[in-house]
Length: 243
Image (cartoon, rainbow, N blue to C red; front, side, top):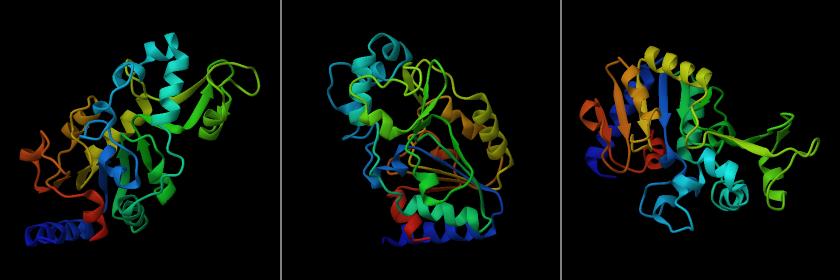
């Protein structure tokens, strides 16, 4: 481990030890080390070729008008039931249990933070693990979605089942957004990791932080690097494993 990286991790370790209400705000990079591809890296979904761009397929309009094609893509590229939490997920759960971390605010939809043991997880973009009938509201699992041939329909009423995931053209859940703003506003440290900070309105949540310890952990620079008190350009799992 490079000396400057080790020094940065030591600084982060000290700040976390002093913190009582830190918040972690994370993106796709948190889960790539669990084998879940992100959207914007060289190997991400946005740089692969499909009949339609992923942004189009993962839109509300496409879901309604071309539901078969939506689910063909969604089942193949969005659900990873075998993925396991990595060092970052596990350490965040430990920090929460130890009283240093208030909450995890995530753009991810894979449920790995909860699988690692985190209790207060605010999922800005929903979760692939939750699916609901659009007619009667019955809950369906990710396994139900994968087991269905073609379009999944409700076991009770036969209605169309929709993932509890925020698609393009849809707004974020008001309650989750409000709680995220509250936690970030009250945080004594904000750790941002595994996100390029280019997806809005999620990236705009940083503007609610008024503390003096803003930490950014990402493989590549972000638009907020100049605002941060500590910037670490390294794999986030490596950083958290070393804490």
